[in-house]
Length: 193
Image 1 (cartoon, rainbow, N blue to C red):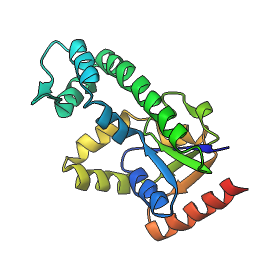
Image 2 (tube, rainbow, N blue to C red; image 1 turned 135 degrees about the vertical axis):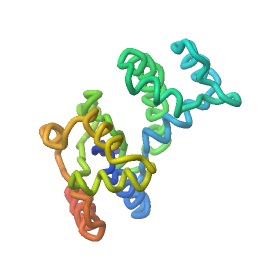
Image 3 (tube, rainbow, N blue to C red; image 1 turned 90 degrees about the vertical axis):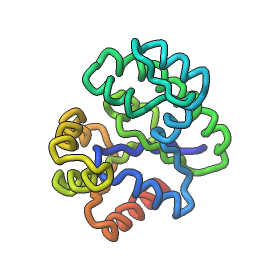
Image 4 (cartoon, helix red, strand yellow; image 1 turned 180 degrees about the vertical axis):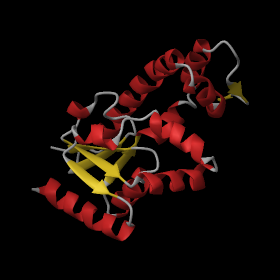
């Protein structure tokens, strides 16, 4: 029976790096963000998303994700409508992914909002990736080329690690990646038991 492991963490915690490392170790991974981006290229989804916005959010036949992001960032109602289209489509896609990988021992499912969307019960275990706030700020500034203020604003829109810790089975501190690798080994050992 395949165990489904949820992986989450705040912006700049290094979830992608940990997921890529799990992939390098031969683990089966599912990145919900990547799936969401792929799903947003589906013509049916493109039309459904356009229908919730007053202004045009389609550019060259595809959704302009940057424009959509700017709109929903300050509009919780539009964000909710958008999520009501994308999240079920990702959930459906993940069901297919599980069916196609049912021979695997584990599937690691990464989502930044796994706890916020109250999905903990969908997983056999939940893993939280953490890093010190200053490290996270620097990572996001470097990655996205945005100001410190913008990063802090994004972080303030997310649940804190302290809150998330109440819902997880395992935590992987991710400041120094050599040490992070040891935590990943411990996690895999823990899961195989």
